[in-house]
Image 1 (cartoon, rainbow, N blue to C red):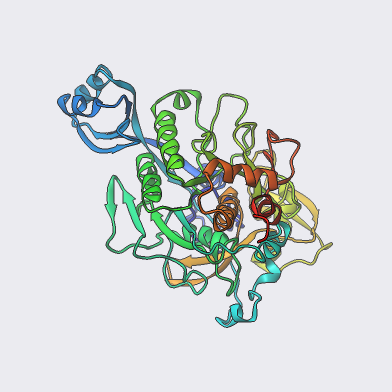
Image 2 (tube, helix red, strand yellow):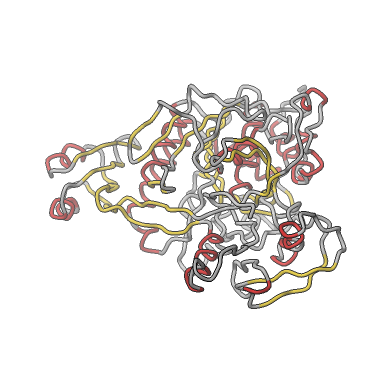
Length: 501
């Protein structure tokens, strides 16, 4: 079974093969729930009983200390605080401290699994010298958004992209633009420099390649930009919400042109929206944007309407971020992508297709026969949850329904996004296919770098406006699926290109 650990706003693209005997097989409920959570992109969201996020007025820090709690970090110009409380009584007392506006437990995002479909051929380091990445034929998304033509104008020279994720593993031939000295981790409030950068799960390395791969095997949107890794996931696969806030402020501190958040969350309920989590994010993001750093964020893979029902996604709902939904090889919104007016600013390629059957057509042949089906070939896809937002593909013996399909022009896995891969279990670098809004957002981050090469001092909101003006296919800027439209790199650069360049 070709699987690896998976984190972030990425949709699983695996065939769920069960290779165990009756004595070791998990019960049906456990097995199906594991599959189900994998497709959600986030397995669980838990609160932490020892760490709290406080939103307050300036000057409240001293009063928090007087209340008997340890203020471990101060953010957003002294209006957001991360505190450690030794007991429940002192936590309860915090709400009565003058100047405290919101108090909430820190949130830990524990993420699911993902599959990387490996490319098994060899890639020559001399490929970039020839001008064409060796795996260019598989990169359907870059020509779609006019990246090659945009590179005649800008390639990201002199810009910096911060990837807030699982880390970026050094040593990949396509990621020699990684600044290892500037790379850090924030884990449970601790800033870690020794041993960084490292990628514990492989997700961040894949995201980095989409934004800025150098063109050996694959080409990033901004291949001449500098990458900085800011890891927020620990070895258990969880990330504190407060660590993401610290990472954002660090990105601004080092002058990153853009900070990318391919983290994704399950849609959160209204009470979280109204509470301290949203207030803290808003203040930190606003400060980061004022400093000049653009924030790009993945919309998440719950196929949820973020406009109705009171749900919201933590970062795409912020006014200062560029929230990205995912389009597929058919240039339509993918079956898994979240959507919603005021939550989606633009769309970008993320892999898959609008129809789940088309997305997975050929998955059996790929895994069981080690081949990719031909376009037009008749086959079938079997699902465990055919009527759910995430119709999990499984072998026929475990399926509730099998659906005939005609292989599209780009069958599984070719309708995914191919990018740089690191396998933590083996220590090997390579390339692989994936899909999810995780991989839409770094296309936007790379585009920010292209814009900033042309206009280094352009305010983040004007960068966002240029990207929106250059987008195509949207029905106005408030389209619930596409926002302003699916990004187009060339048209965006034309909106900011100075006369005579």
